[in-house]
Picture 1 (tube, rainbow, N blue to C red):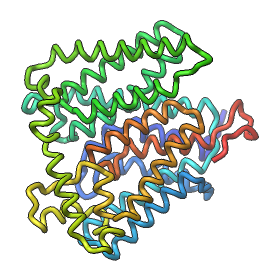
Picture 2 (picture 1 turned 90 degrees about the vertical axis):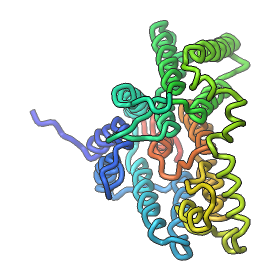
Picture 3 (picture 1 turned 180 degrees about the vertical axis):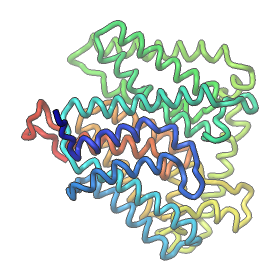
Picture 4 (picture 1 turned 180 degrees about the horizontal axis):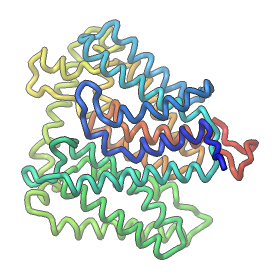
Length: 391
């Protein structure tokens, strides 16, 4: 008996493979970039064979930002570095476009969502197996290498998925496994020493709980409040078992002393760099991906990325670029609320908060949740396409 495999089947299988391989984003294979970038070509290839792309408001606003970043090569301070960033933007936008090539049912949405959660779990396994302690912090080094702050963002899908199980599922077993999973992620974040990761995860949890409260369901609201209290209690207990060097990292005095690992100095340099530019630079920037080059050229004390995507976008693409960027991100947040998708909303909040202390310009987990929001716009219930959500 022959089994018919459709283009949609191939796309979904390759997309799920891509999502599950998230840890490979931390594996660099030379001029090709991350290993995950190669796998991302599979869903792009299978989706575009349909020759069917539907631009909704999400894809349009992201397109505006991508085009503006591409145009910045015309006035870029360093064309070579801008070209590399632009290539990544184009590939990631192509990945987002694939979500509009098909219609999806609820079963397929659950599979994709589960793949997102498992991408966090696989990352946790990789971290436990390959990470080493460096100055008291557990870090991924060697072939699979990732900054602790970025790595913690990989856990966002699993943490919010586990929280959703605790709040929404009636089974005691589901609630218990959800609690254990969140505790596990909290432990990994703490031993990594990532303060930004911890704040981002907590922001996502708070965001999920905030939109879950309801006047009509007092019992559920009380349950959500108890879950929040439980997470805080568990966190306070886990802190006690950390080595002294890590305990001190999570104190306000330590944050004030080291300036957020030097971020306050970098941000001050970024503001100075922006202010010394011409009126043209104020509105159009110096060109995408040029921050590190500019810091080196003007001999600033720190030659690094900005560690704040909004300030970095302001420097590189000016006021207009920042407006396009905020419009794109805001549209995704607004759509997640319109879809009443607590999972998407909470994960997006995690990523946004994380981007306040990191440079998440072509960050795969960020684009993965954006892709999931786009896919959610083209779903229908119970096989009835007439009930498909408006994109």
